[in-house]
Length: 235
Image (cartoon, rainbow, N blue to C red; front, side, top):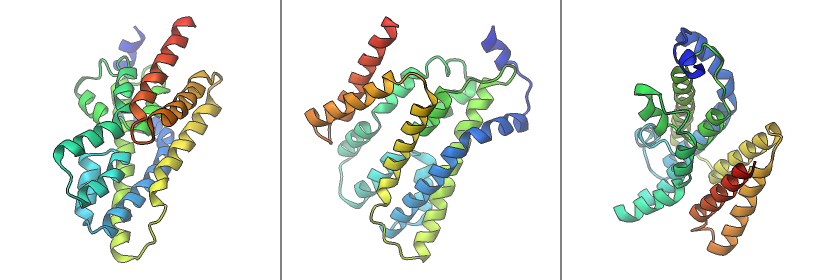
C-alpha cells in the first residue's frame, strides 16, 4: 500500500528537513511577525518575556493568545475563559475532522500533531502530498515543529524588544487578520475549484449579519461544513 511504503521510508531527518523547510517559509515569515507583535503586546501590558514565551510554548494558539492578553488583565472566571477559548478556537474541531485520515496512523507523534494543528499548519498539511518513500509521520512532525519554532522565536523577539523599546501598539492585533487574508488568497490562487472558498465567504458573511460578530464563528463553520459536504456528495 502507498501509505505503508511512505511510512517505511528510510529518508533521514536531514533529508526530510530539506524537503519540509521550503514549504514552511511563508508560515515562518508570518509567524515571526505575528509572534513579535504578540511578544510586544505582552511586554507593554506588563508581562515578562518568560510569561510570553511559556504561553507560546504551552498554549500555542495565535488568536487565543491575542485575546488572552485581555483575559489576563481583568478578573475573568475560569468558566468564562473556557467559553471564550471554545468560541475562538471552535474551528479546530472541523480541522480535526478533516485530518482524521492523514493523522490516523501517526504513532507517538499524533498527540503533538494534534496540539500543533494551527490554521497555517493545517493549510500546509491539508494540501501536502508526501513523496513516495518519505516517512509521513516524520514529515508532518517536522513541519508542525518548525511552525511552532517560528512562533516561539517571534514571541521571544517581540518580548525582548518590547522590554527595551517604546512602541505604539495600535493596530498590531490586526496582524493575525492580515495573515488569514494572505493564506486565503494563496489558497484561491493555487486551486482551480473555488466553490469551497466562495461557500466559506458567503456563509461567514450571512452568519455575521445574523448572529453578530461575537457569536457567528460556530454557526458559520457548521454552515460551511454542510454546504461543502453537500457539494462533495453531488460531485
